[in-house]
Image (tube, rainbow, N blue to C red; front, side, top):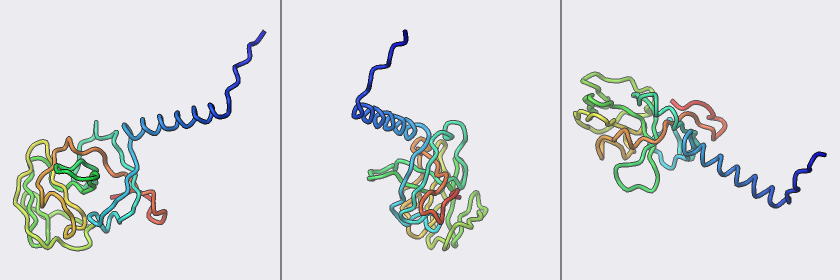
Length: 174
């Protein structure tokens, strides 16, 4: 004779489903990726204030950080939220901002994502081992490495993968 499974009350079933959903959400955001909202204009025009982004935490473990990656990181100073900036200089490279251009080891890099050229001079600075230099795409309105220096790679928590809001800009972020 078959035994019947005990009946679960609707309230207990609801609580169990919510708890399971929260547990899965915590597991995903701790290991795979998470949603971020951009609160400032420092990455305009690439990323606008209020854009919703999905980040990737997983590939940080096997793919090296590259120039051009847009990363989320814990700041080297007290800040209420992590920052989002673009990696420009890699360990061992000499970076300078001069005459509206970024120079890596004395050569200008192509930056089609900028709305306007930087109106400041910075460097030259050689990026120490284990660090990167990050700049906002809105170079003239970004609190970034040209103010506070290089960033430890260990402070990087995720890469920005794609924008899911607003819908008219849905897609990969480059």
